[in-house]
Structures are given as C-alpha cells and as structure tokens.
Length: 118
Length: 117
Image (cartoon, rainbow over all chains, first blue to last red; front, top):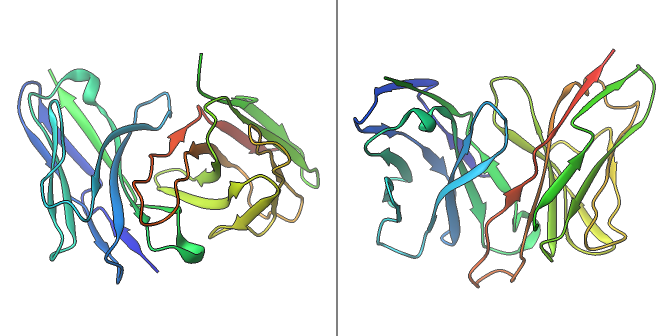
C-alpha cells in the first residue's frame, strides 16, 4: 500500500518570503500522480498543483512550484512571494494510475499548517 | 454554476441512528468519492464509485454504506455500526478516463460536519 508522509506539522513564513513544504511517499508503482491541496479555515479542499510521475519537468502554477524527485520519492511544494491568503493546511496526496483496485484512490499525508506573518 | 454540493453543512445524530449525507455534482464527472477527515489528520477514503451502479470499498468502509443510482448523486449513509462517526466528511468527483491515460483531478465539495450527540 502507498503511504504519504508530511514531516512538518507546522510551518511559518513572513509575507513576501518563500517557504517550502516537504512530502515523501512510498510506492512500488511507476505510474502515478501527485497533488498538493490547500484547506483554508472554510475547510474546502482546493487543488494547488499536480504532477504526473512520467513527466520529468517540475510543475508550476504562478507562485507555486514543486520539486519532484522520483528516485528519492520526494515531492516538495515551494510557495514564492507568500501572501496572507496562503495561510491554510496543505496536504500532499498520491493517486495510483496502475489500474486494479487501487486505481483512482487518493492517499493523503497528515497535512502541514502554514502560517503567514504580515 | 458547475460544482459539487453537499448537504447538510452540519448534521447532528443521536447514537443508534442512521443518517444520510448528500453529495451531488453537475460536472458530468464519472467517478465520485467519500472521504473522512478527523481533527489534525489527513483524509481517508471511505467509498468510491467509478461508474453508475458500481462502487468499491475504500480504506475505512466499515459502518458506512453508499449507493450510485445516478451519475450525479453519491449519498453516504453512516450507520449505527460506525463506532466513532463524529468527523468532517468530504465528497469529491473526477472525470475517469481510465488508467494509462491522462487522468483528471478530484474536485471537492464543501463538506458536512457530523456530530454524534
């Protein structure tokens, strides 16, 4: 079974600075997808960014980018020019693309609470 | 307005009662999912359905039941057999293009907070 680990329960950053959130995962599969979701106080889960495992190029979405290291099974999220609205719980998630009974399931990490200081 | 709706937002249940949480989507998505979130933890999969009239158990299906009679709807029943049902429940949906093809992202509803009195 796949597992996802976020080793930083809490992180903080000054407004306009850069912060990196860590995520590691364990899998024996070669085909999969990785995601970062944001959960603000409203508790709505919002997709931040996604990465296909077969792509070597790191995904970017405006101020958000990832450092995907497939061999190391690492998938960190970098937030540049942090804004007050970035404050939330961030979840890393793994989705199998291997087919079979595990296909389509999202496995989540425990989450990292990000605080942004003005 | 396209999206996923969940109702009610807050739900209170007495011990021994069954309750049903609603999840509706008008995104024409094939697959739908139910997750449970406990305080300070990530989401755990309860049930999922990739097609109408078919669904699969997730990691924590005991004490829950689902149905998928329509593509748009995937209600979750929390039965009296669920020993610790107080939690935040999230429904999600995605287009299902099948494995080995570009898969789409899961989009989430706003959630239902269930409290057992």
